[in-house]
Image 1 (cartoon, one colour):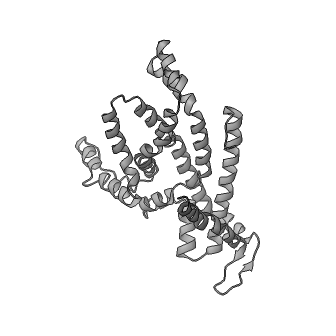
Image 2: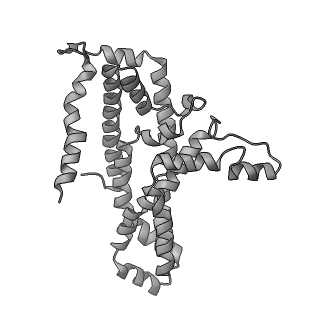
Image 3: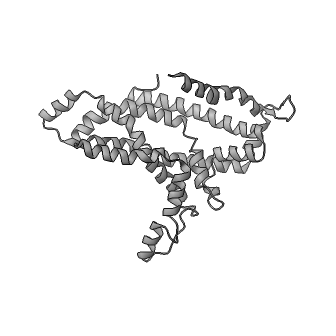
Length: 282
């Protein structure tokens, strides 16, 4: 049963590692490629465009870490407090559904909702006497739209891991807390949160490994000519120079830079988590 998953990871995650050597070569249509050492990285770091996309990636990823990562934890804690099984099933169905929508559909929904002329948000703001704003082209709001759409799509689904961790907590601890007269907040603070801390620490470290990813599929569907300077990230840069202009060596160098930096963030997060909580990846 694990064979399809293993084959998928082998083809898409391990085989391409061998081709990372293109970052140190000049790719030619007719082999062999020419070894150029660090020339591609020198070209990369001398480009002001690359520094801008790195900055955009750090800002967007930082916003998601602060305003997206904690939301599933809160959702799981709130769902755990819903006593009616019927109500919980309805709520879970509603918040899990967006996960199965593609970013193309989600981008279309947000574009329709935020349209300054006939969108729901635009009509409400005009009814309140405010001038219409095109949020999708507003460089001050587009990053927050990415955060909001990410939460809407993933908060419910990502809460499943935390709910599983909560279910694994010994019920006797809650019974003892009831006997001692603890209220709901005290049980959350002293039993539930400490019980899911290992899960939080592990997922935080894994998220740091994807810190520079910033979700290509999301950004490329929300990107347009006006806001591209604000949400142009490393992955869209790699996509553009690799597929559109055919600079495969430069694109590979940018991808390798992101991968090495991501590995460094995982190791740093592991040791910090180990020092603060006593828990890490190993």
